Image (cartoon, rainbow, N blue to C red; front, side):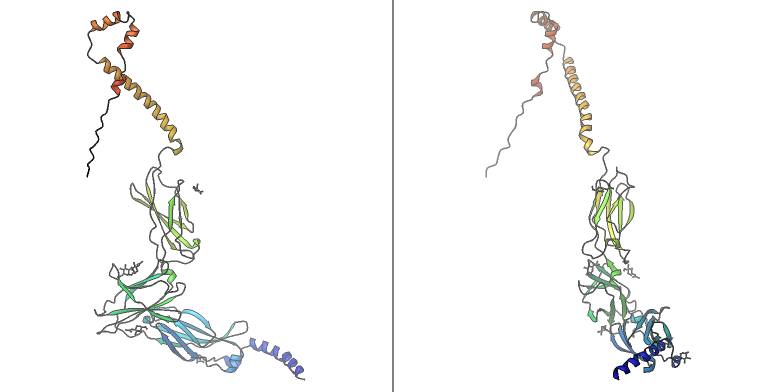
Length: 414
Ligand SMILES: *[C@@H]1O[C@H](CO)[C@@H](O)[C@H](O)[C@H]1NC(C)=O
Ligand SMILES: *[C@@H]1O[C@H](CO)[C@@H](O)[C@H](O)[C@H]1NC(C)=O
Ligand SMILES: *[C@@H]1O[C@H](CO)[C@@H](O)[C@H](O)[C@H]1NC(C)=O
Ligand SMILES: *[C@@H]1O[C@H](CO)[C@@H](O)[C@H](O)[C@H]1NC(C)=O
Ligand SMILES: *[C@@H]1O[C@H](CO)[C@@H](O)[C@H](O)[C@H]1NC(C)=O
């Protein structure tokens, strides 16, 4: 009997439920908007809202209910984010000093997730926190560097009293932390340094710089940002130029990022006239130099940023500089042959010149008494001119070898 009842129930209820889900109940024509829309928690600029959907059980049983939550800053024209929520609470980070409108509405969907009916919006405006205008910091920016350090810098408010003390807070993953290492940089900008490991660089971070002064209420400044956009990478390493003019390098170590995401820039400087050529290389770690003059000297350095998977705002610093030395007109392997080709004739010429010089020296000697000389020819060489001349013009070995006296410097005995 019980079995039969449940069988019948399935038989009759199932088709009814299916057809019900496809038709809009008559009482949905005036769908109530959410009520009691309020802030139930506030952490730095992170607000948690809750509301009551004011929908009857009947409506909720016949449709899928979702809530659409959007917000718009006072100074903006666009509603941001379009959350389709399942619950009547939502947490969102805001740049609160801009003032913000938040609104929420009920949406009924059929079983195929098609919108059947939407309520009117319920709107709430969140006024900026109190404070004197132009006392808040401005021109705020952060820089993620050396894999995991963060420096944030700002200009102090133009109308901030001189006793104003600013403090920086940051919030991520349910934790609010106070920055402790304040500094003033070379340009006179104020800032705070966040140590390694305190920020998860893969998640947005919300920052608030507020301040206190005895004579004015300081307007706080809020900003939310994605740290990956503000990352300044370390420069590429192992830059070298191969003999075939291929420049190669390695991506900066320590980052879990595919090489295809990186954009490199080569700065090639002609050192003879300081002409600079900037070359872009996407995702590769080599480049073949083609346009330069092989007889000139060049320097090459490289920097990197993200451009393809994600875009960063800053270039890295430049890598170490490498130099391309001018190429000599001869190929290195030919040098000994060419040397020989040049050296042999020169050597021969020198030898000839040397002999000539010796001859000339002999010839230019004061002419000896011919009578004596000729007496020799006839008395000692029996008139043999050839033998006589061989004897007369010797190239003395002794002349070339001067004895050298080496004086030893006396050793000073202590
Ligand atoms: C929705 O807004 C319109 C126009 O402001 C108003 O006439 C209507 O009564 C509202 N509906 C409900 C259910 O509040
Ligand atoms: C600045 O913000 C922090 C964190 O919300 C808060 O604890 C502190 O009281 C604020 N300081 C001032 C002067 O408003
Ligand atoms: C804003 O900050 C940048 C550095 O990030 C600085 O060069 C510039 O001068 C600042 N602008 C003003 C108006 O101070
Ligand atoms: C960041 O700030 C610290 C502390 O003042 C400083 O030593 C460091 O050079 C800064 N780094 C960069 C990249 O600006
Ligand atoms: C340049 O030389 C390197 C190694 O000597 C070689 O791997 C590379 O293929 C060469 N490139 C060209 C374009 O010849």
